[in-house]
Image (cartoon, rainbow, N blue to C red; front, side, top):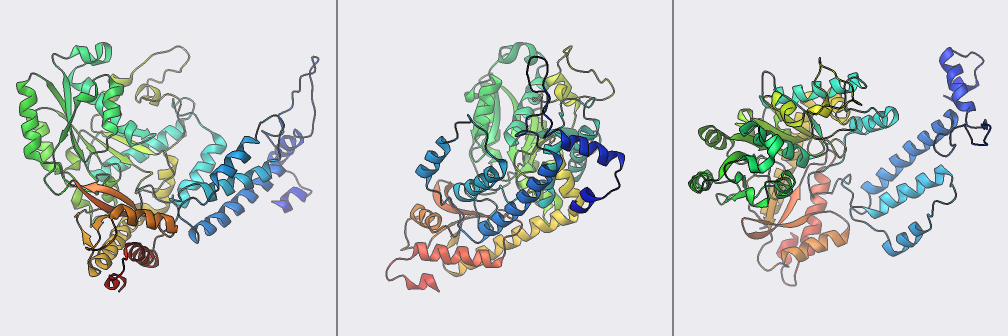
Length: 510
């Protein structure tokens, strides 16, 4: 770039860029004395932007290297940080370069690092490099995805990716959908679609349009955002029916059938069955085929919440664990989970997309009307929205399904390796998940499990979480980071053993 700036030859584009650069130093005022030139702190010239972008790229790479060799948990003196933060009164401008350095330092010291290879916590792993690149591109162009009139290329890229994921999941024909801010938004969309499909009057009259109280069914091991969703939809939290599990963390279809029978006898209105493909606590997959059969028998909407387990569709070797997902009326898959994009990248996929326009249609004079294409603002709960899907598009295009198969298969293999090492040392793995997550307990005579977890976090060497599985306290380790290796599994084992040790229990250190 430096060579091209100093050259004597200028293309028309270069002359335009030189004009952009000159705006930084040109002070233009109108007759009233108001500045007409761009605010330099917000819109620096081209040369300064390039310098800052190169600096940012370099510093982020160095910070990520330090993170990988440092603590997984925050190391920040939070009182000192708050005092320093209070000094930002925003009265006078500050140079951006030291601000960038300051911000990177706060991120490096002040958050749990999901991008650390020994983060064995929830399933929000380090993002792929193509996804990170997508964020920078989108931030630069900042397209508005409410309508295809203003962002036709971006809208079509997202639609193309959704169709590809739907096809891979086994939803053939006209299946479509859209990207969402999260799995919760996608699940909320499913609930709205199910209510609208069962009773078109729901759109105008809400819950009072039903002849009885509407209810729906999820496993007691589901993500409890369903309570928020029911509250927001106006059907009330009591509409959520938490169904007992079968003792292994999967929804009991016997208990589900009994709940349906009882609600029908009480003149309530069942409208949806939700099966979870990858429970939060233990990565269990509900019996998808049996749930589909019950939904068909009662003419209910069938939704599969595959927020993180849905990534198994990438692997021909592992996707059998999701058999039955292709019978869903709709599904949720989060790209920011096991597909490893940056955060805020959910997906809602629906077998019959016409229901979306029924649920979210709106007409207004200030928005363009594109009859040839169903715009996102009339088919989704959102209006203004960021170009989310480029993250998965670039990742899929760069790696292909074969690359993502490798990604999920190696995660499962590393989880199996961790299981082998734990069992060898007399620890007990209590879940049997097809996903890369283990729930386990320590041998008799060890410290209490939550004490062990606190010790692991205090060490900064790894991140795990205590949780509850089938009514019992357990420790959970999720292996979804794309660059976690055998040495990281070994370090987790060493840290667990050190935190679990008690005097006289030396065999645990073997």
